Amino acid sequence: MQFIDREKWIGYALMLFTLAVWASFILISRLAGTSVLTPWDTTALRFGTATLVLLPYVILKMDIRQFLNGRFVVVAMLGGLGYAMLAYVGFSLAPAAHGAIFLHGLLPFWTALMGWLIVQEHMTRDRWLGLSCIAFGIGAMAIIEVQNPNTHFGWGDVMFAGASASWAAYTSLLKRWQMPPVAATVGVAVISAVLFLPVYVLWLPSGLAQASWQVIALQAGFQGVLVVIVAMLTFIAAVQRLGAFTVGSFLALAPMVAATLAVPVLNEPLTLGLMLGLLGMVMGALQPWRLLKSK
Image 1 (cartoon, helix red, strand yellow):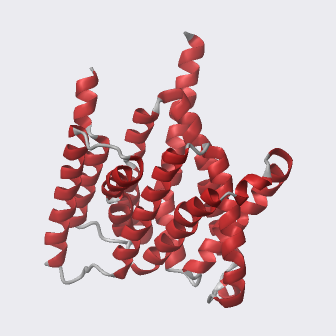
Image 2 (cartoon, one colour; image 1 turned 90 degrees about the horizontal axis):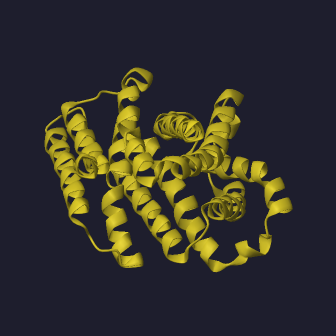
C-alpha cells in the first residue's frame, strides 16, 4: 500500500512538472516570437540542442538504421518540423492567448478528423459533446473579438491551426504504425535536425547574431531539452503511474494556465472573448461528465 501511494505521489509530481513545461511553452515561445530571433532560429535551437544532448544515447543505445525507415521521416516532418515551424511563426505574429486557443483548442477537432482518416476511429458521444463545448467557446470568442477594434485574427492564428493539424496527424500515425514513444521522439529530433539545419544555415534568415546569450540559452535549454526530452519522459512516466485519462485531463489545463500567466508576464489582455474560448476549450478537453460517470 505504501509503495502504491508513493508511486501515485511521484506520478502527481511528474504530472505537475509536465503541466508547468507545457504551459511555459506558450509563454516562452511567444517571448522568442517577440525577440530578435526568427522562427527559424527557434526551430534550429530546438532540434539542434535536442540532437546534441541525445547523440550519445543514440550512438550507444539505439540502432541508427531504424531512422532510415520512411515512416520516421514522415513523423519527423509532421510532429517535428511541421509542428515547430508553424507554431513558432504563429507566435511571432499572434498573442500567446491565441496560441493557447488555436494551437491547443483546435487539437481535439484535428485529432478526431485524423483519427477517422488514419486510424478509422469512430466518434463517440463524449467526443461529440467535447467538440461541441470547444466549438461553442471558439465561436463565442470569434463573435466578441471581431467586434473589438483592438484585437484581430490573422495569419498567426492560421499558423497555429496548421501546427495543431500537423501534431494531430503525427499522433495518429504513431498509433497506426505502433511506434514506441521514446524511439519516435528521438527519431523526430534527430531527423528534424538533419533535414532542417543545412537549409537553415544556407538560406534562412537569422537573428542569432543580434540576440544576447541569455536569450539563446533560454530558448535552447527550454525548447531543446525541457520540451523535447524531459517533458516527454515525465509525461510517459506520469501516464504509467496514473493512467492516460487522468494525466490527459489534468494537462488540458495548460492553455488556461498559460493564457492567464500571459497577462502579467507578457502584458497581454485577457478579454471576455478569450476567456469564453478558453473555458469552452478546457471543458471540451476535460470532459467533466466522464468523471461523474466513472464514480
